[in-house]
Image (cartoon, rainbow, N blue to C red; front, side, top):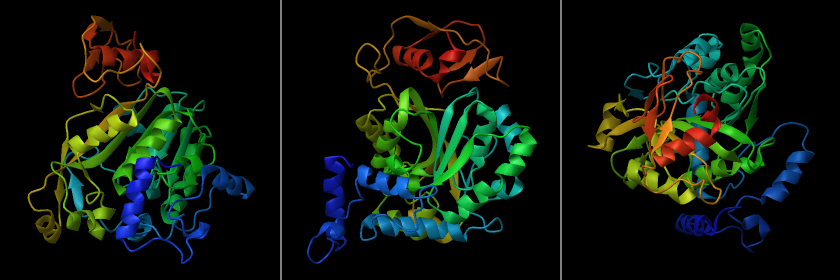
Length: 383
């Protein structure tokens, strides 16, 4: 199911790594995962959610990254801190999210390793997907915000983290006073089509927190998200980015990989990647937060490179003209009015780093912003 350009790049990496498959080049020697149809048949034959005990392509360069990351998060415990810290971490959560976090079971919160707060407010009734959910803290937050009418799905590849995530659902339901539609599936964020319950144009909002950087192929992740999002759906996610392209010795360092630092993209490369996939207008939700590396040896390794935690908002608009985002933000004289309907933010609401809307006050916006507010899940809160 990979695009041809990705297959070519992947095959080149396989060759460089000394791979190339089996002795006879038979079907079992392919470095690519099984086709979605073949994989779907095996999933449907199973008695439970996707049971992935190892990489679906063990001889590929992906496998080393998966095992490194899985091993890293299997070893991290509540008493063992990550080697980096994010300035102001936790202070960026809106009021509704902070209230929800206060109800989340302690075991889940203690194993939360995200860098930001990507779950927006005002998402009642939406179908939400969390990529690389880990212990599930953001899923728990989203479950309260979507309410009984919504649904939240968390996807992760690490058994230890999923065990914690699933273990607290009952306690959380009692704290909420209702049974949330919250479930966790084991799977790979590059291959969302293989996760039971996910299909094209089925998700209103996708979130992620320090997980995309852990992927060995971010383009596959973004393409998969674009596919599962509904028209007007949003991918809102926090991750770590670098102010320059990272050299190979930093990108391959096991500790830096597991900490979402080794996989950090240069911000401008990330923007170009998003646009290539179809997310035409990349919005920064708030100002970047500086990342500090605690370990002196790792600080020496990265040199002068600076890292930042940034939350981006990406909207899917794939239909033909005129409902299409433009490369530049043109002024067509549109006016946006916030209805004051987001819980906890009735006086004002922030859309991104450029736009803050006061309730019932007309604001002149560019064409892309008007489209995002009028034809995404946000339309319930804006005129």
